[in-house]
Length: 180
Ligand SMILES: [Zn+2]
Image 1 (tube, rainbow, N blue to C red):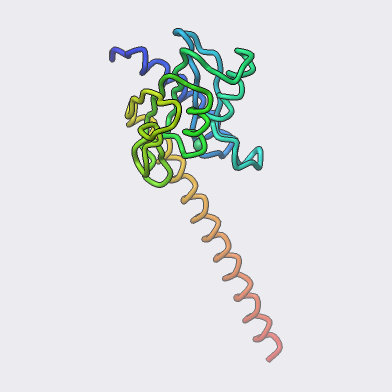
Image 2 (image 1 turned 90 degrees about the vertical axis):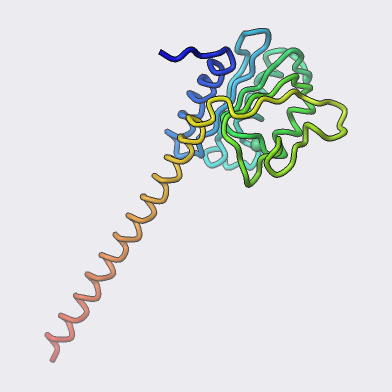
């Protein structure tokens, strides 16, 4: 059996959150916030369900952690997230003064902790520590399988539409024959 480090254990909880998003047809990204070894909040992507551009896993987890701790600062906290944070979430992490961020998969399109840019290395008033690529394979695999499902569903719909179109064309020809 594999030995899981503490970071891997908390990342696997973030993965469980990501799976809740997957079940709703949301891009599967999950996050948990841990303070002194205790999970204080969690969240998963709800952008489609909430019809909100800001409903990212990290932001929802940060909002809940602020409620739980009764303030906008989140001292001695680590945020675990299955996908590299986007610029909005990286900004919220800086604003909440989160000590440490651990992410799983890299995001080459929007990742702002090393992929497109690393906001945590810039001269802002707070610099969180960063750990990248924890359970990277599992986190990336979940996203890959989500997008594969999505493509397959789209392909199936296309084929169904083609069949329907074919049938109505067939009916059209029969109609023409009957008239002649
Ligand atoms: Zn984000």
